[in-house]
Amino acid sequence: MSTSTKLIKELREKTGAGFLDCKKSLEKNNNDIKKSIEDLRKKGLAKASKKSDRAANEGAVGVYTNDKITALIKVNSETDFAAKSDTFLDFLDTLGQLVLANNTKLDKETFLKLNYENSTVQDYFNVMIAKIGENLKLNDLIIKENGSSNYSFYIHNSYRNNIGKIISLIEYSCKNKDSDIETLSKNLCMHIAAMKPESLDIADLDKTIIENEEKIQRELILNSGKPSNIVEKILDGKMKKFYSEVTLLNQSYILDQDKNVRSVIEENSKSNFNLISFELISL
Image (cartoon, rainbow, N blue to C red):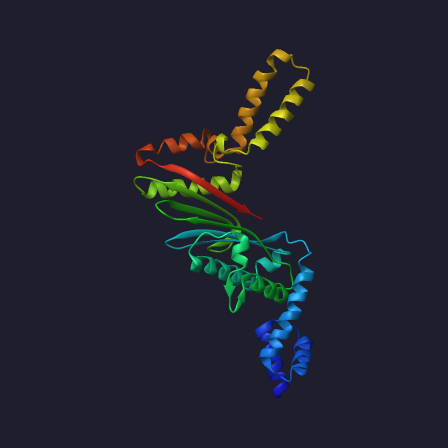
């Protein structure tokens, strides 16, 4: 293998760029690998900005945890094929480890500005966009400080033991964390992944969602010709049904349709099980 071919091979391995792009960059920069990497990176960034207009509706979600924080990260790609690749999954895991290393709450914008390998996380995204050849987007970043809470999660359509298409997570407290509580927490996570509640309880539901549903149901009742004096009574029943569909504690429990989630939790009152919050991220 000639010296020039070796340099091209080395540059391709370090950048993921094409053969001709590497050859031209080396010629332009007098076979200086470092300058060629910088040159290709700049070209890679230009490619990335071009690809950033393309729809990214596939991808994966990862969960990461240590003693201080628990994080959920969702990165979108353009195709399911790319999302299943080791290159993409390793990328997602690297992002997860960066979050854990920072050990504090972050929003998406702050995270993308963090330093990574003498650059930023956003630059890392751009390099991976050029390498994978698809638009990649950080869609969700949820970080919870562990404190005294317990966490349990469930992964549906998993690619790795911490990455999949759907991740549901609950935060809870309890007096005695035994095998029954662990089973309950896992089952609740499975329920959330399947039933996709909007909120924990009625009081947590977005008021605009409630107002909009009430408006729709009232119009439907009036248009059906029901007497005006019973509209509110019928509306009350309609809204109760609505709440039982969209709020976790009022949903029928997926493993026992004769009970709602609230009553199932109350059956574990001896352990003082308290469901604090939940998260659901899916593709």
